[in-house]
Image 1 (tube, helix red, strand yellow):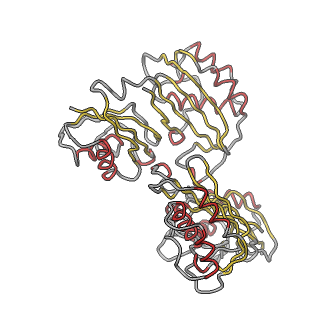
Image 2 (cartoon, each protein chain N blue to C red):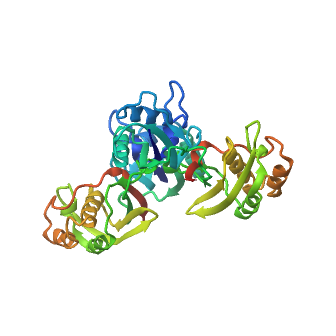
Length: 240
Length: 240
């Protein structure tokens, strides 16, 4: 069996997230049924790098599957794109070692979150639009406490194993948007959105930057800000 | 009667353009029926700066209407936004002189066109996505021939009065996109899209930059490139 890795982009707006679910339109389900249209495998198993929530986007999501097909990787990519709906596109397909697993082989992932401090119908499904201006410098100060190997329980809805190694964090302006970027070895369910929700409370002056440091030391659940909505979040890159 | 000017943004994707039409979802129709929900006028007449085609977007469209209402302009803006669907948003409402007419008082308008030389599902409704790389320098050379007071018959589907005074043209890269911006005293139906279609043929090497100059001298119809699709086009600003 050959092991095929694909790198794809999708607009999460009209998907119930990545993971296959009965009677829901999901990215995994849509790609799997498109692959079955031209591959011989009946029980094709498409493995994705991670779950993404409904509404969350991906600029370069990675998945892999095994096939007996002799089709070249460019032909696989083209055949797949010809069957996919316009909100998914496969940028690349390549053959990888048999032991490559898009999830377990991943070393680091980068997520981006776009905040817009006013309303814009053109970017409604692509940013978190809020009514107030945000002060950059306390948000920047707060975000510095995030890096390192830490227990992210306060920014998690999961039950155990919540230690994350955050490699890099960046907060910057791009045009009228505020962009938060974070690179880590792994991400807990809702983690980025809970961090962004807390940073926005800091930018509004509702809570102090130091709270992020205290939360990460104390490790208590649900003591940060609200969870930011899904449509501002992008999986940007997976490093292997 | 007070004369109220509004500046609004809309995502053109799900509208059959600006102008009201029976049984179609249009921007003019949607705003008019939202205004009637809180203003007393039965025959409210909303005047827009120009028609836009289905799929074309606006970052700052201008319209005006007359009303007896004593509501403050901020209240008008807020009431209107509370009735509008999420793909239209009124950024500003202000009271203007009785003789202000959003269409006839306009001095210059700026349009922008976004071209993406690859596929991206995230920007599907917001750019023209093409399969080939484009050479910037012949496109830039060609676009210089556009400025000045000229007969734009070759870039028009209209029958008469096709002289346009093009004030400024700009072609530049922004990230992975190619942006074409044009400012003129008026725009003919499909003019920007026909110019962009011709520029792209020049960028592909199919026709020479000098053709734009020849077309504008000869003034013959339909001799340029194909018409670029609507979703890459934005009305950016109206100057009064």
